[in-house]
Length: 230
Image 1 (cartoon, rainbow, N blue to C red):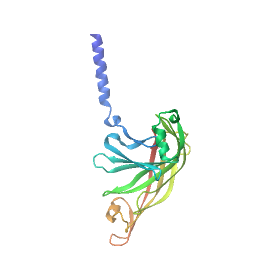
Image 2 (image 1 turned 90 degrees about the vertical axis):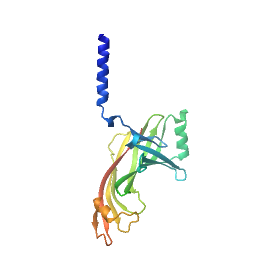
Image 3 (image 1 turned 120 degrees about the vertical axis):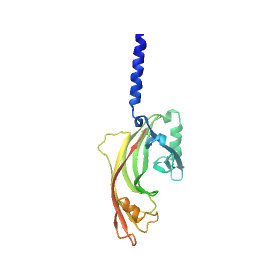
Image 4 (image 1 turned 60 degrees about the vertical axis):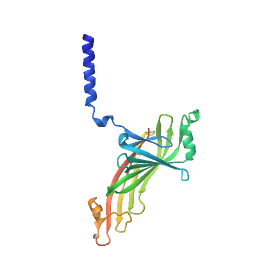
């Protein structure tokens, strides 16, 4: 009888503890499978689907993270290894000793949305050239050589980039590297993407000129993103 009472008490406590865990605590981030290693997405796995595209001509690999319901692109990540992409893919698929551990240089890129509205986005593409080491079940960033960012649009806006920074004092190797960047977004009234005077005003841009004449819109930005390998 006493054992049954203790067991019942333990089950009650366990049920209480499990019920007390907030919903977000049991959610998990989507995992992006790049050629060199897995990278953690900024979005929850249950909310997204991931579409991959390989470009052998440019030796690049792209992962596009889409909202599961709307199909909207939420995140774009690329890898451009300094080894031929076919070789990197073969090493990752291999189960022989040659795949046990490998170290080489690669460039990671991520598109970061700086402002958006009415289905339009102003994007910065952040790049980090790194040295990585990976194995079947783990990966690490051994060193960050350099990082920079640029406008990710098609000429509809300009990013006057001031700086791109990473923590040079962190002890390597690491599994995550944060990149901070800043600058000024500039949009002209003749932009081809349809960024309107009203939209940019609502997004907090400072605008010179009027909606009925030539105008220029500007807004400063301070942003960051993190490359987290798995």
